[in-house]
Length: 154
Image (cartoon, rainbow, N blue to C red; front, side):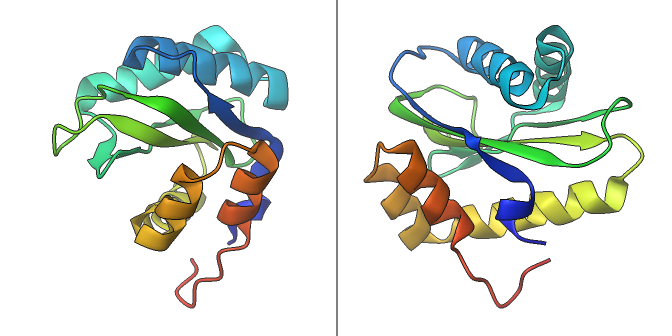
């Protein structure tokens, strides 16, 4: 699996208008509706429910919110780079500025886990994160994410 299989170029965003975790999740839900035709209210609710179980802020300014849906047939992703980091209740208590959201079919546990592992490995790479933080162009952000060649791809 490669990120270009789950990430549409229209699902990559740079934004300066988000000021809270809740607003970020609302924006992600609206983006899921615009890009993938998903119900924004359901996406927001599912992401909120997942965050209530424990923050998906994994540290070093990175969050990987994710949720599963009965109505979906394949895993899809969205990436948001924030101009100003927001508090995300991360494990290291650092604010978040790189957010990769995964939405997956409820029935596809293995694909969801492969995608989660791939995103996690990609964003663990400090060089990739530095390139993402150095760019505002959505096309460039997409290219940085999708051109990563990992020998340990899922």
